[in-house]
Length: 481
Ligand code: F6P
Image: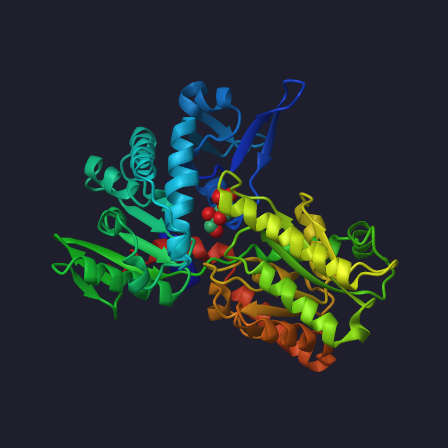
């Protein structure tokens, strides 16, 4: 039951992630400004840390002085301190090799099954190991005996083993926020054995879908013939230690998104966003929201929109696509090129179809706060989420919840984790440009009954995965061991 699950959540814990939940930056006047991180990981874990307490260990990527003061520990949130944030300071070389190198040029493309983009400089692996060692040392410094340690994501695959060597009896958990690839893809990794060995130091490893969990088990099975892998129960027994591998989908703070959507002023958000374009209420909007990551399938979507305006001239002047994009990982050439390609493609489409009073695609890199984003969701009749591969994709969760007026349709890649859990979307193959165009067209033409039926199915699916349950599920998996 939900209560039994909540009982499994420890009174105090250690969370370990690459990104920090709060960053402190010095502004031009020398004042320290605190920003809280916006992503799914933080919004799921920060409430738990605030209620249970403990320590969050993360890369101190903000102001360097803050990162090393008091052994790197600050109390957060600054307004009402509830837990410790322990910052791990990383050198420039470490950031280059560990973050821009191994994490994002080996593991990210590997796990998104884009092996052509893997680039594994020897220094990347060295730095990845060294940084995981640094994180393990930090954990060893802050963790009390009996405090479970929960590692997050692909930046920290080796740290569990390094902590286990120092703390044989600790309870260690990991959640892998991105996909786990098929064994035939995982074989491309030059360090596959070491990564699996690092992760198997955990008692519990979570993935967003049963498919990822199963692929992980198959990878373990082929890498370690001496291990006992039971795919039915999701357990690996190796050298006397047992690891439970679970599907534990991460959702969103449903109530928070809904409240923000209800409170928002949709008309003014339309005005702001459509600024250069005609902003009257008659223009129908579709929306995409993503980091400028090559896994997100943005160029195919733009091509699909061009097809649509090409074959449906009546939609020109009438229907605008808004692309909200965030710059990301720009230390990597592939990301810089991707952004340039997206911007070029949008410019071409706008040149081709745009008129004096209508801009087909509105592109913005503005840093929107959550309230504005919720308003944008509400203003959009269609959300288009078409990644080639995506661990879960929380935009696909947020959009239906923010559609508080009861209309809104989701076009969703069948290769996003969200497609496994949510029913009611118009699903597409993210490489099938014609199918994406068809799905957007269909979304614009759904009758009111079907729109509302699909939307409520989506909303129910998202509610069932509310992020508050995610933490409880991860810990309660240990109870049946
Ligand atoms: O979804 C995977 C993930 O690494 C998240 O953990 C993170 O918040 C997001 O991508 C953004 O990436 P980055 O931390 O590299 O900016």
